[in-house]
Length: 274
Image (cartoon, rainbow, N blue to C red):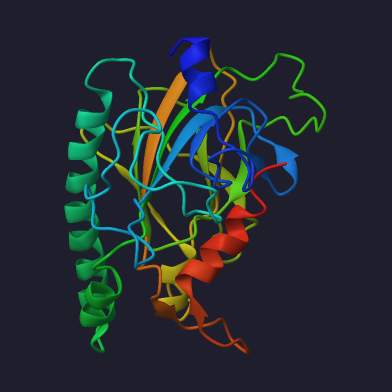
């Protein structure tokens, strides 16, 4: 738990408000929304760093020092700001920087395997479309839900509302908390149901994202999931979203044209906060 002043220094700000870009930074409980209802968690969001002349820089090549010290000046467009790194605990940024590099390697390996499984040259398509992955990483803290089942104004009763992720695959590292993360499962001839996805020691949870579903022609469905943390303790999870390049072109759904991933991401982020 970081001190309150540290959280305030990293607070996510809307576009046009200080050095905010509408996405990066710390979010208080209820700041993030899913399907119009406030989520019962706090988080820090990081996005692939931006460099002049291209949508996002190579991993680690951000020139950022300290919580919001950098060589680019605002105001910033949506998603084009700078990452906010906490000074507490010591060494946090260095550890997470190494983790990002490892997750990029793993994400590349996973989508390559998925391309081989699909065949028809999709391995090459995935590798070409993720060379400069517009990755996103979150550190999320979930306090237990209130015992009365409400979460403030919206009374959604969930820690994070049902949704699917946006990109290729999500690589989720979570603590040992059970009975919180749930996935929607549909079996032929049966009604859909929520199933607990409890952590397995030494393993990551892997979700299929919207873009991968599109690339597979719907053969792989985007993983619809939610978090309902009613147990004791403070649950922590760190999802790493391995995404297409900002300018990657992805086939549309039936009857729709293709989408540029960056545009798709912007559209989603605009609806993430109240």
